[in-house]
Length: 101
Image 1 (cartoon, rainbow, N blue to C red):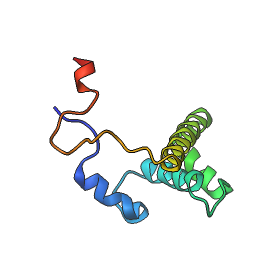
Image 2 (cartoon, rainbow, N blue to C red):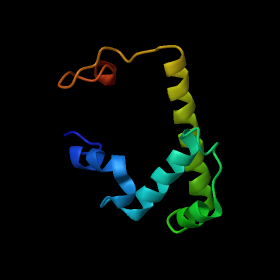
Image 3 (cartoon, rainbow, N blue to C red):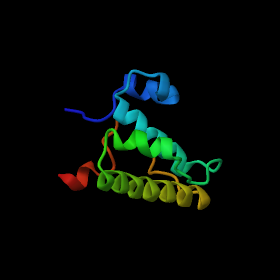
Image 4 (cartoon, one colour):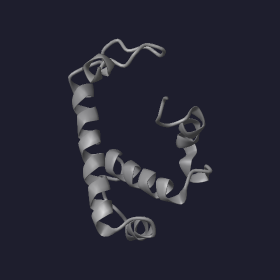
C-alpha cells in the first residue's frame, strides 16, 4: 500500500490558498512560504501567527518552524553543491527500500 500525497493534493499546492485543502494545511503552507522564501526574510507577521494559533499550539508552531527551517536549509545546501538524488525514477523501488528489507 502506498501512502503520501495524492496527485490531487499535489495539484492544489500551487495555489493552496484557493484550494480545498484543510485550513490547517493552508496555514502551515503559508508559514513554509514565509520561512523558505527570500522576499519575506523569514518575518512572521502577527496575522499569520494568529492564523497558526487557530490550528496549532505554540509548541507545535515551533516544531513546525524548526522542521521547515531544517528542510529549507537542506534544500539550499544540496542546490549549492549540485547534489542530485540517486537516479530514482517513477515505478522503481525507492533507493532505501532494500535497506528496510
